[in-house]
Length: 238
Figure 1 (cartoon, rainbow, N blue to C red):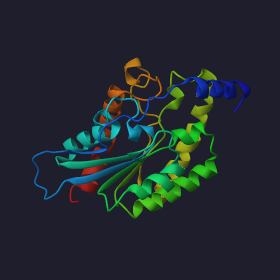
Figure 2: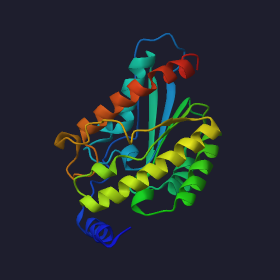
Figure 3: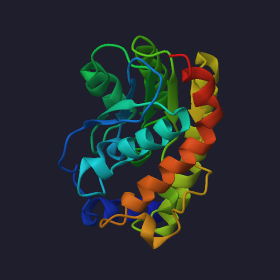
Figure 4: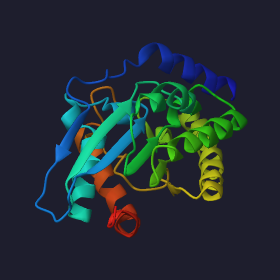
């Protein structure tokens, strides 16, 4: 990382005031009139997006938005649970958050990576933590989707040179993640290159860093579109 990017990283660390984890229940239900004998159990584990940072209540966050979209696609009731922490790296997901999940889930989303980039964790560290997290997830769930890091390189709160550096690091992390997920036979969703309206002011929360309510809703809709065929193929008979 060059001197200008390091200076911008220092400035960001000392001036950006991130929105906290919102109040509200970190679990809930989406109920529809279906033919199944039980709701599908959907668990999301990861960083601040899973923790719902950027909205005023957990019910407005990313995980329940995903649950609503998935329920519509599958025409099935869903019980959702969010295990997320502001600032969580994949290592924290591995050691602190995964152990909080009890019992088996029908669908699991693993969403982390942005904080690993901001902390400048090495690519080898990332590979080791992602591999181990996937192995742990497989003991809990048969249907796993790993999300790429968020689009930090678009964040209006970060300096231009820092965004360029983060963009290059994101490309490396995304390529490594895609390879690991392929080897371990789990789904990988590359949201790094998707148009999720991250260039719009309305996408962001008060801190100009996290998504706001609109951002989470739009991302959830796009995720559902990308995963629709996979969801129906893997979960229709669960």
